[in-house]
Length: 264
Figure 1 (cartoon, rainbow, N blue to C red):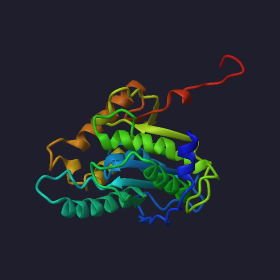
Figure 2: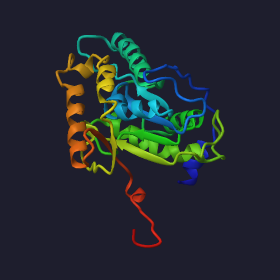
Figure 3: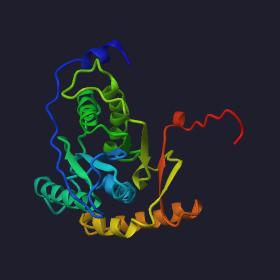
Figure 4: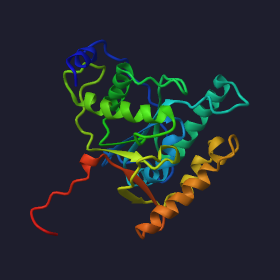
């Protein structure tokens, strides 16, 4: 990190970020969740489609799940204005989060205009400090969608900034992020190598019902059958690891280490 970048980070603090709570299927999480998982997507719907089945299963086991949608993805309906479709996406996101047992945060950015700058990193870092996740899930770094690749870069740096006490934000430093996982998204395929596979056979049908509350996920806007695609992908990923249906994630190369004192 350059000295100039570090100095810019030590400027004004952010205001607290509003969180919309949602109670979901499978019973309420325990008072002291084993994990807190923060899934950060470029658009409302990104994280629910790619990792929602895993997150529903985690919620059912008592984990806390939070979605951060940096934009609503309000530009994705050619028949509606961004303002009208944005409000629709907000309603859909809240309904889907409720079914998945998650909380949801809406970022301040516009679809297609997500900035790759210090201010965005500080915003995400402060959300990380507020939520205090043990696991962060976000987009893979390579994508044909600008907002996706930008989100990946911003989140990677924000995890570091959130951990540094010298970076002054609205919330105190949080060093509890143990890992960052990257979702298996058809738009983020270049260079994606699945490394972690999580069984979702028991949560897949409930996930399908939940995420279909997004009109676009049903294929009703652009014609792409998102729910069916990710259902089929779960079957493919599960087959190669003998787990029925599974969701795969990539990790950074430096995380692909296994340290042993002797042969297993």
